[in-house]
Image: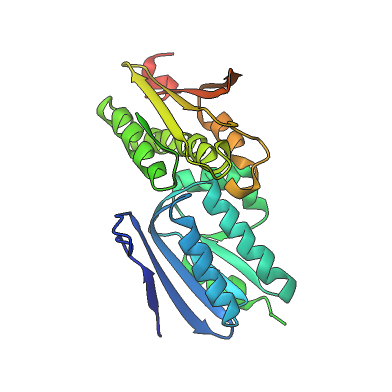
Length: 135
Length: 127
C-alpha cells in the first residue's frame, strides 16, 4: 500500500499548526484521506487540495478518516460536502470515519449526518464504498 | 485580545479561550463545544467582515466559576448567516446549539457576537 503524507505540523512559511494529512490510494478508484489534528479555516484548504488531487487522479470513492481528528468546524464540513458534490455525479461517494462525540454532534446539528455516510471504522467505510460502483 | 483577522489566528483564539475554560475546570466535552462555537464566530469575521481587506478581530473573554462569556467583535461587515465559504451557513446554527446564550449586535460599524457558556453541565451545578 502506498501513501503520501501531504502535510505535517510546519508549513513552508514557517507557521506551526496541528494538522497532518495522509493520502492513500487503495486502487479501484478508492482513496483514503486520513486527517490528524484540527480542521478549521486555516487547515481545511489542505484537505480540499488533497481531495482535488485524488479526484483529478481518478479517485471516485473517497474515505475521509477522522479517527485522529480532534477538531472539525463548519469550514471543514464545507470541504466534506464539496468532495461529495464532486464525486457523486460520477457515481462515486464519500464515507466518513468518526467516533469523536463533539464531531458527531457537529454532523447532527448541521444535518449532515443525514447526507453523508458516517461509520466507526475505516474498514466499514471501505466496505460501504465498495458496495457503490463508480462510472 | 486584538489581532489580525487572518486564518492562522483562528486556532490562536480557539486555544486561548479553551485554555481559560480548562483552567476553570470545564471538562473536555464542554471545552470542545466552546472551542467550536468561538471558532465559528472568529472564522466568520476572517472570511466575511473585511471583504478581503486587512482588518482586526477583537476577542474579550471573561470567566467566573459558572460561566465563560466571549465577545467576538469586528469593525467590518460582521457576521452573515449566508456564509457558503465558511460552510453551508452552518456557523450560526452551531453557535446557537452550543452556547447557553448568544446574541449579535451591530452598531456604528461594529458587529459583536456575544456568547455565554456554562463551564459545567447543569446537573453538576445543582440546577
